[in-house]
Image (cartoon, rainbow, N blue to C red):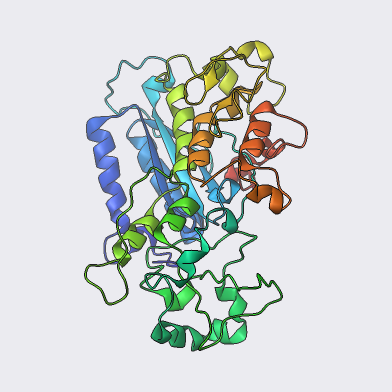
Length: 396
């Protein structure tokens, strides 16, 4: 549950489910793995719970590294999560043959310690909730608008009494963290969409008998998470209708951000040698460069990252008519994130839309292309400074 910090001591035994992961790793010995959990894991018992988890993972033959990352970097939603990556020790040492026995010492190290994993660089993009909203016709769709009974329950909450605007999502900002009970537990902390007819931003709010605020649609939730538009969603029924329409919201609220996971996974594939020739001619030596923009350009080879196409390393945009076509730039670490960025572009209704110009911003496509080019002032040009082990006192 949100806010609970029982960790491995959870009386329901939920915390000890982690040991099942350890058992699977010990028996099957995959080359590598990625784990994800809520950010509170860092703080449970002053970090001791996380220390135990890392020690257990090292004890079955893996070198591990972790980061606390916020998906707000790439999507308009606050979603801070702990990501743990592990590579089997013999694979990391270059002696792996696809099998392993899990032997060896536990690696030691403090919280935030571990091997020098090349965490990917991601751009700090200028995204807003308005970028993911569907047309105004859904504002009056009975599947999403608050019923009079739901609105009365909202009016009775303490935070709404104090400041009603706290429960209305900022269209020009980021949404709160989507949670599994976004629909079923709406009265607790859910945010609602309310596009006043005058598009007023002067603090006005809904009143009984007026135009009701609404829930995010399922598609909007998927976009906030970073799922591509091609991802098939189930149907959401009207309140009181047949079926459990909340189940879809439950699944979306429990999901990981595909864009962040794709970036981490692509770097992990490069480390264990499953990318073939990594994007940009990246090798393990280059990956250890810690993301510096001064990476030797000779490490970058021709080729494109996108839907087909070719081109050289000096050209970041292959074909502007295709809003998802991005090519490589001079930074190998950023090139590893290009497939994840392409996934992000597929998660937005139109990443090159004039909508961005109306709000005084560069299009999402232009922001991403500028990031891969490593242009001056590009989103994320200084982002590598944030990739510091948390044990050293910095959060990313």
